Image 1 (tube, one colour):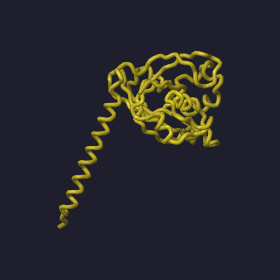
Image 2 (cartoon, rainbow, N blue to C red):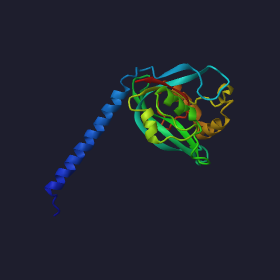
Image 3 (cartoon, rainbow, N blue to C red):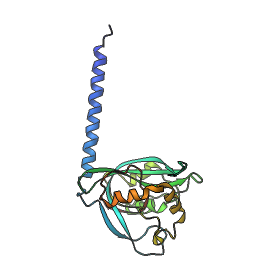
Image 4 (cartoon, helix red, strand yellow):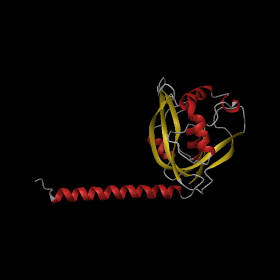
Amino acid sequence: MFRFKPALIFVAIVTLLWGGFEYWQSIRDIQELASSIVPGSAVSNVGFQPSFPSSFVQLEGTGILAVSTGEISEFEFLNANSGETIGKASVLDAVTKNAEGKIKRMSFVLQLSLTTNPQRNLIPWITAKASQLRARPNSESGKIMTNDQLAQIFSKGSKWIFIPVLDLDSGEIWESLPEYQFYARSYYGEKLTEFRDFVESGLSGSWQRPIPLLDIFYLFP
């Protein structure tokens, strides 16, 4: 009959306990990060001066208030209809609360490079504005930043208002961004209405995919 050695049992117990400790520590971290978000305040209408090229001085949009976890990851940007890879996105993990006070984890696209030109950032104004607001070095104009550089700008605990892509037909927004409009439309496919409903409901329900951005505000610290 097979017998467990005491040393192996001890190692298994320690591993299990350590795994449980790390899990609950991560839960506490998320709760602490989201503690500054008041239920019902995560989604609001905002007026903003566009950071992207535009003939308009002031635009209206919807902002999502969220706190960075400091985690940056890579994400394949896919065509929703064909499944074809469009490019690669650098994505920020963040936390907020919905209208009922439930903690929501969301991810936001900070930069996007296409398969046809992997060194070019299609949305450079996002990182440029964030770098300026946080007095951090920015990359060369239009160039992709490393995940470490992005993590320094969007450090753990930093609080932001993210303005997502919700409307792909507004001439005020897209007249100067036809290339981004094309790829955002390819990415969302038929899912844009679903995402818009999720945001307008105060983040009730769920949305798992990274969110393309129009603009960004930095709050603190």
